[in-house]
Image (cartoon, rainbow, N blue to C red; front, side, top):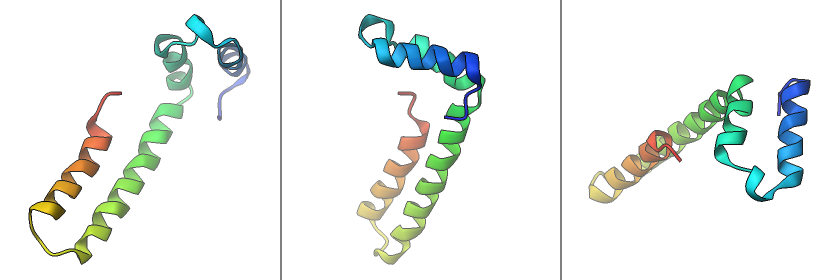
Length: 79
């Protein structure tokens, strides 16, 4: 995960425990503090760009536009 020791241990404990302790609010700060969320976003952005470029083989029109917009939505959404 690229997380340094204290954060990694805390995250591992949360993952092993599961249940009510395993919440977005508990995990997200641990991931953000090490840049993991930003790294995942950048990887997703690369995939979206590639997917959008692949759409060029389709005829222009509403279907292609919708697929392009859907890819953008994946990056823009919060959850």
